[in-house]
Image (cartoon, rainbow, N blue to C red; front, top):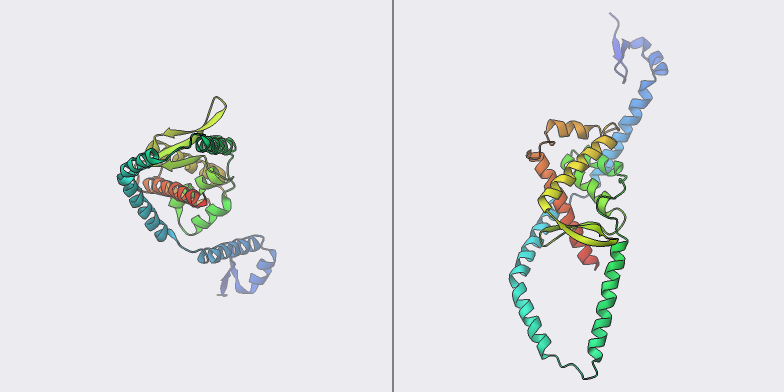
Length: 252
């Protein structure tokens, strides 16, 4: 019996005829190109620093500091009132005039900045394929919604969603004027996470490598909001928003 050989496409043939098949095989170059792409992406992933643990520690520290500030906030306000009563204001009223002028400028700047921010819910769909590919190749499926929403809400500059004092706020358009509006944090985090999963699946579910995301979601039943993996996704979205808040504070 003659020795059998197998092409990379899966076709089995006699060894002495393999070279002829390879010359005619149309699947072989496609498979080799895909394998090279996967290898290249894996090599890129090895060069990406894993800062996940450090980030979680940083978030925990910020939460502790926030609680500390809440406890001492009353004392700070009392001291501020006492200091204000001790300041002598000249009869000319010059200091009062300067204070009003500066306050007005700051208010105007805030309004101008808000007018350039996209209203929440009116964002353009982000170009997220490359970012999502890195995560899927590294089996970091629970990070996909957070990465997608970061590009969606912060991709064009200042974000239109934030967490302030453990409350969620979004930019809304009230009679032509953009303002921050407080919404229920848990409800909106859950809703936006669900929406991101739907958008990722519908936009990239049939793409190379990314087709693994909807398969993983189905396997782990993430369409059930009470499932473990879905709850992990929601926490990742919240952590992303807290991190963006910290970055914005540092920039200021």
